[in-house]
Length: 221
Image (cartoon, rainbow, N blue to C red; front, side, top):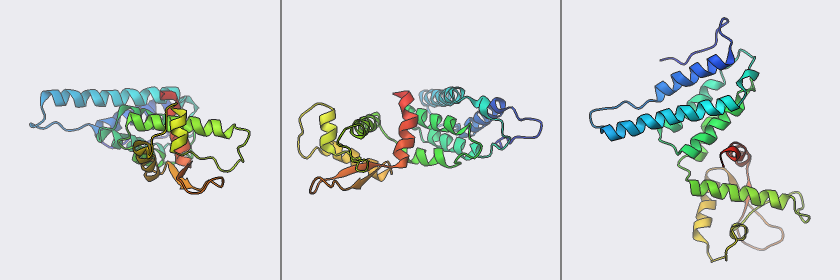
């Protein structure tokens, strides 16, 4: 089934987006073969329904009535970025973030057509524990940026910052936290930089992708 495109006689934004979502999710449906059990089929059907509801909820909140420009082509790659995550069986919390990113692109006719797909790659299989770490890191960044001794440039976190924020004792080498931080670097959400006030150690700075993900994730916390 082809993805519908706007025509001169059909410029209603809400109707078009609704049609695009419905057709796209139909394409994302997983074909059920003889080897799929009834329980598995029921589970997959529930996931598809849930994915549709998540996206519709985000679109509704995104004020799609703001769409007046007839050029909606940027929606197509963004919606398929979401659908690819649905096919993979992505975690629901990650689908909510992607849906919010998609909804955030709606009011902008010149929106980035690859934004949702790139975010989907960064979020792939990210657990709720990893997402909680992102929330903690963001809270630390906010607190440090408001501190009187902040120099305006070196906004970073390290494993000790996270342990302190979680109000527990530091246990060297904090393997779990450092493994999660390394994973965030590999996803392009953080990068390693220096700390001019210390010698050695690993210090993590946020990327633009981190800001995008956190902006979409705040409403699902």
